Amino acid sequence: MYKVLKATFITIWSLFVLFPIMWAITTSFKPEAAVVNGATFIPWLEFQPVLTGWKAILPGPDSLTNLLTPTLNSFIVTAGATAISVAFGSLAAYGLSRFTYGWKKYSNADIIFFFVSQRIMPPVVLAIPFFLVLKQLRLLDTHLGLILVLTSGLMPIVVWLMVDFFNALPREIDEMAMLEGCNPIQAFFRTILPLSKPGLTVAGMFCVIFGWNDIFFALTLTATKVLTLPVAVIALNGTVTPYWILAASTVFSIIPLVGLAFVIERFLSRGSLGGAVR
Amino acid sequence: MSLILKNVSVVSDKDGVILDDISFEFKPGRIYILIGRTTSGKTSLMRAIAGLLPITSGEITMNGENLDSQPIWERDVAVVYQQFINYPNKSVLQNVEFPLLRKGLSKPEARELALASINKVGLNDYIDRKPAQLSGGQQQRVALARSLARKSRIMLLDEPLMNLDYKLREQLRVEFKEIFNSQADAVTIYATTEPPEALILGAEILVLHEGRIIQFGSPTEVYEKPLSTSVARVISDPPMSILPVSISAGEVKFEGGYSQPIPTKMKNVKEGRYQVGIRANDIVTSKSGGKAENGTISLVEVSGSETLVYVDTPAGEVVLQMEGIHDVKVGESISIELPGNRMFLFETNGALCVSPDNAGE
Image (cartoon, rainbow over all chains, first blue to last red; front, side):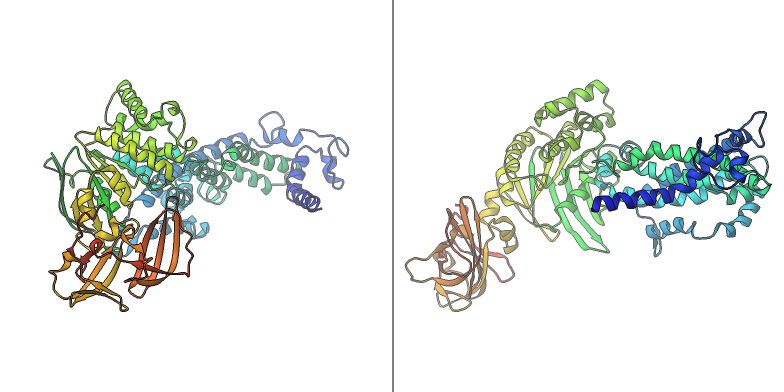
């Protein structure tokens, strides 16, 4: 009885959650008639799937807009910001986990809070300062400019996650490495880093998700040269665009994240350390 | 050629005095046992030598060179921790090779030394396993092999057998003795809370208490003539019963009225207040009903071949050890005799006054 209830509940909940996505996917394959004459849901039964929507967003004779260039831009910006955030963020986190820094009554906890506090302020407050800084640096509407701005938002997440992760690794491991002839940097790269794959994966995943989905900074700090995917999709919304093209573009923009989720799901479900610590 | 500690102190804002003015010379080729209770500073002393705990004042030198100015990674100190610390992502062989490669040895040299060391601890069949695939005892052997392979000039073992089961402990203790004796020119320091371990390893004993070395000597010396009640408490297992007494008019008077004639060896002490210490295996149950102290049993521990009985008496808590397994129950009353010729006499401040003859027997 309990099992049946559970299965029913899960099924209903899944349908509830997945319905909008399923609807978007089916809509992206619909011809005009299947959209404007009332709602239809089931392909082949209620309508014949066509590729009109998809052809409109990809290069080719029927192209309305080309989403491939924005995808590439999004990819460059996300990868760049993630790489910088994970690399420097994990180094900072390791330092904060293993060494004590301080000035007067301020210590590690305050530094960690400083990092986290970067995310407290709403982005809209930061938009104008960032705009002015990037303008001064001649980085407006460039990949690098956007990467730097995103990094300022992503690195705190990495530091915050990785400090906890490193705290959970026994200190004795790095002590041992130092006793066996490694300086702290070598101890980190040779013994701690190989144990940190699960933590780095999680931190990296957060960076990718937030970076990929960023719209605010991309909208305010870039214009034409660096058009990212979310901005391009929103831009479609601004004009009168048929629903099937919109649906195709949204589905298109979440495909990379869904793919990534499937790839790293294995890492995540294996547990945080997989028996690394006794 | 020795490790010299000169007035080494460690004071922290949070924990107060951790090490209190320690001066000692550790000679190479010898094994030193650090014995003391859990917070006596054993681990801190080792961490200070290894460089993991900065010292507040004093000096640590090895063969004349000052260790304090050297970073941890240049000190060449091997440590075996109480927890079995190995690199989880490396195989047994890679674990043992790691410090050798860090030392700058070539790959084949490192492999050869590592294999020899693994052989010494009897893990030949496991060289490709990861630490997580080994039992606790095997993991600790890997840690030991890693430290041995390095042939460091200083080897520190911090309660290495603490987390192992009884049987494995016995076995490794015996192996340790052989392994350490082959480390000819290294200073080996071994910390333990367990007196039998110190006695079995047969090394010289340093008794640590509240951050200070309170006695140094051979196991028999320390056992027969503990310089103070603190040493006696640390070194006696089962614990020594220590009772306040007063000596007057040719009698040792315990609290609660029980008294007995003063033992011959204590004839010359001045009258006054003292403490008497007596080991658990020296106390006997009284059958004659003569001059005996009566008490109530508060705790009974049976351990295989002997029974430990904790007795509440008017004179204080007394622990006695009986050979074999006895059917005594908590709450029963019992009469015990405290043989005068087995008594240690301590001043009220804890300093040893008189020790019995052949106290070690």
